[in-house]
Amino acid sequence: MSKDPCRFILAVLVVAVCAASADARATEASIGTAQMASDGTLTFFLIARDPARGITGHGFFTYKRGDPKYGEMLRHVGGLRPGQTKSVPPWPSAAK
Image (cartoon, helix red, strand yellow):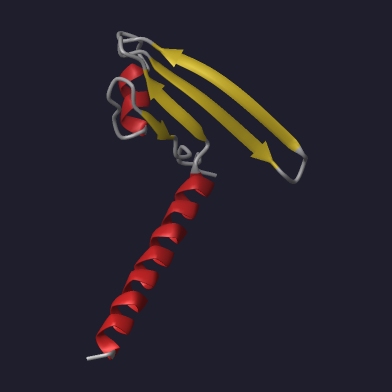
């Protein structure tokens, strides 16, 4: 019976480590954040890095409802609700 609490604690630690690893991977894969304002306007704060050349670039983009790219951008982040902020995953690379 004394082993059950130890197994429980071990299981909790394993789950915590796995969750932390998943969060770290998600953060590493992020290229910025996207926010939706109360009027539905999307704002993207993006960053691009090329460590090999020591180059970093920042971008700030807004998309109002009705913008031709609005739906594509909203789908890319998996949807947003007013007031919500999400990480932006990288876009798929162009075929080489």
